[in-house]
Each structure stands twice: as structure tokens, then as C-alpha cells.
Length: 331
Image 1 (cartoon, one colour):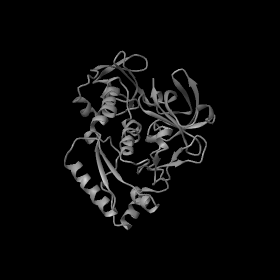
Image 2 (cartoon, rainbow, N blue to C red):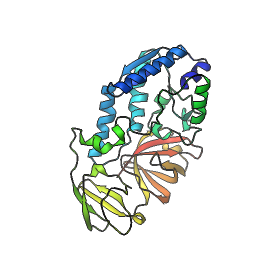
Image 3 (cartoon, one colour):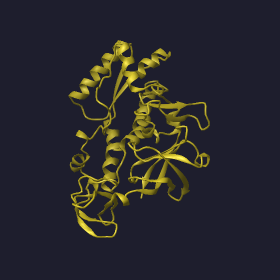
Image 4 (cartoon, rainbow, N blue to C red):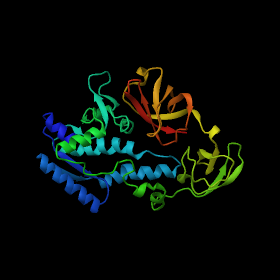
């Protein structure tokens, strides 16, 4: 649909498909379908192989993050390093000076600290959270044709043009992790992972043994293997002592977190006093205040909320839905 809209707006686009994973029947089918769509629209299709750089800059850091006890967000890093990084460099080599994607997000170029990245119109599919690490320089070369569209509208408009999406499934899983089972994926990697250790509560009392800190994330409830009068949650992961801390829901909520600011799309000194912070894609943004600290930003939530897992991405929004910046949560 992004391709169709560009043509209808007077652009003369070329299509570029990048392979991030190894060859196989699904990849072959996808390329054949894309070639058919492009032929129907009279557009040249280029296919480029980015498997090696994807392995180096997305998959390897993903495994390393789990090895040190973090819970990474590879999709946000892929946007920064690959889709609007190496991929953008590749298409510039084809003579293109802009990259259009199907992201549901909005860019405004007529505002202070331009371009301004905002939430897309489709709140249920908004992808500004995953784009928060993309730099201003990268966004200057980006176009999001679907910013004002809802996904159900897109499918209907494609059908009206005699087209359909080349893949029917939703892209809600990590693309390189089979069946969304990251534990099995990590088990076959060469990187050493932490072994079993103690499970304790916030008072230091012993509750059992965990099977490796990489198999747990802060806030997790299921799979702890502990019988108790009420559900227990993962409160913290002590990587130095290889210890998993658990507790009841009443001990789970936090009022603050620390963020290593990676990308300020608006200067921090120009941020409003009260902003909205989202610390997980599935979590609603909440009101908070920030202070610049030695290692980044100290974030204080207006109301207690579920803990922010180290390694996840914190995205800062204005009341109007503008992305002010994004960073990585740390202990």
C-alpha cells in the first residue's frame, strides 16, 4: 500500500527487498510474490542480502544481552542499525535518496527539531515505539505513507486495487526466533549462558532453584515452579550472584527507573516538565518526570507501575504524541 500511495502521489519509486535470514521456501515464495506485485505496478524490484550484517548487529547483541541478564528489544535496534542504517545506505547506492516503509507512524517536517516523529493514526498498530531509536538524520530520509491510515482501511484499499498483502500473518514475533521460543533459540547459540542458581524473596529467604537467569524476565509470573498462597512474580535478577528474586504482586510495582538515553529527537532541556513514558510495547504510556543523571535519565513515574525490565526500550512522548527520545533501561 505504501508503494501504491507513493505512485499516486507522483513519486517514481523502486522496490527493495532485504533478506535478513537464510534462504528457504518461505523466502523464495515471498520474493516471487513481491516480484509479481512489482510487475503489476510497473516497478523494478531489487533484492539485497543483509544476512551477515543482521547477524552481527541484531542477533549477536540479542544473545549477548540475555547472557548478561537483560531482556533486549531487537526490533528497535534493527530499525536503528539495519532498516534505517545499513539498508538505507544500500538503497542510496541504487540512486534513491529517500526510504519509504509501511510503518504506522507519522513524520512532521514543519516543527521545531524537525523532523518530528509522532504516533500513527491507528493506535492499535502504532509503531512509533519501535522507531524511537532512529536518529533525526535517518528520519530526514524516511517517508511513512501509512501514517494517516488504519490497518483495516489499508487491506480494503489494497483489495480495491486488485492487490493483497504478500504475507497474511501479523509481524508480532521476533523474526529470527522460530515459534517465538527465545529460550530454545538461545540454547543452540555458541554464547555461554548462566546456569542454575538460587531463588530468594526480598528478605533473602530461599525458595528454590532457577534454571538460568536468561530464562526469566522482570515481571514474569508463570513458570517459576514455586507453590505459594498467592502468585509470585520476578522482582529482580541479580547477575553478580546469579540469583532470582521473587515476590507477591504487592512488591512488584515500581516508581522509578534509570534510562541510558540513546536518541534525543528533541533536546532534553526542551522537554516539558511532565511527559509520557512507555517502557514496553504492550504497556500503556504513563505520566512521569525525568532528570538528567550521570548515566542518562532518572525517570520517576507519577503512579506506581509494572517494573521496567533492563534491556527494554523506554520511549518518551509529549502529550501530543510526539516522540521526544528513546533509550535503554538499565539497573
